[in-house]
Image 1 (spheres, rainbow, N blue to C red):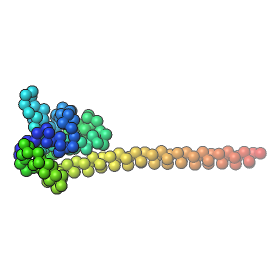
Image 2: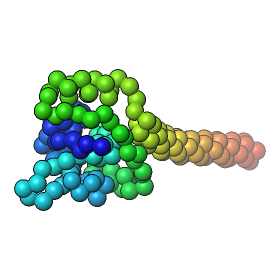
Image 3: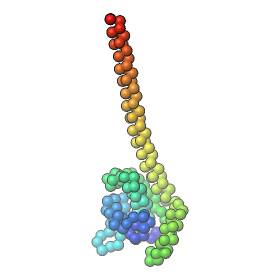
Length: 163
């Protein structure tokens, strides 16, 4: 398994290298040590790092902040994706591989899809809970209105009887 360069990884993720560097700092606890190397050493990304960063990108696109993303990443396991050897000196080979990776699903991407589906399920559950709360509020309002109308009818009836 060859490690990827920052340029290759940024292109694969569709983000700028500066963004990639920031994400490496923000989410260091979920990435390999090579993503935040000591000064003077080259930054390198494992295939697992790339899968984690794909999920980070997805969560960021959903509007989650760094703390929330790190909390979600804590409970997740990412599969190692074994990709074909790449020649990073040859940009044409990189482009071909990018097309190949995006054109077919790698076995490890199944885990990433599971993570995405779990995230969507959490969002659906939150929406359903909010809808239940609204329904409870509407039901309570309806019961209150009915009791108020019943009370008003009783008062009108009593007023009619005593006049």
